Image 1 (spheres, rainbow, N blue to C red):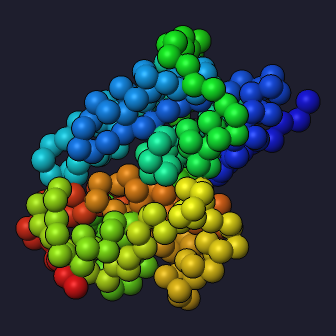
Image 2 (image 1 turned 120 degrees about the horizontal axis):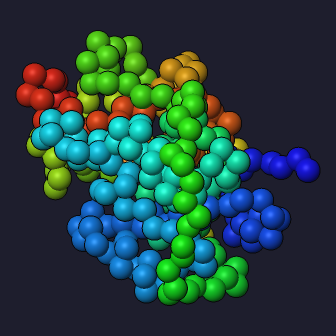
Length: 285
């Protein structure tokens, strides 16, 4: 029987159908809070989508910090492959990620799966709230994954750029920053070494991808129209996305993929890495 990979967003109703289809599905809750790093896991333990596992941004979706490689550097590929294997994820598995924060952390996992060459990765549109609103229940019992070998490391479906390469392309790269406007402009900086943004970057706050009333992603056509002025004459594949630490930039990447604007690049170190290097230029305003 042919199966369809879900590769961007799924609704709660689609997820329910998928769970009843007999196809291997792994549900991952990625809820997190930068101000309280235990909050996401605590919330998962207090009530989660049945069968879902929990992955922690710092422990599972990031690698060791050196002080100069950003707040959430990518883990080594073999380490992340082992994490996926422990979750029971194989090449045949459909993965659906979600959180309670508008998809900002779920999108990080979605992008990382694509980085590992795993195409069957999607985000639950509206997250846990959408699941409950559709009549879904929450449980407190731990889920026991059927562990698998490390997930095969295949050709990446998502690509990155390093700070040196990006610096060499300043003035030519189409760079989109996903942070809130006041951080982008350098009016405040609660987290990183310096205030401001990478010269030449344009600002698209990741929350602008969501419908304020429903908390779900805007329709694909609307997202495509909203991203068009940011792209200008550039193709989607010429766009580099960044944010504070390489997390919410993935939300913009997901929004563009959902809108059919495919192939953009992530600067994973983002502002937290860039601003830690005093030799790199900073812009404000």
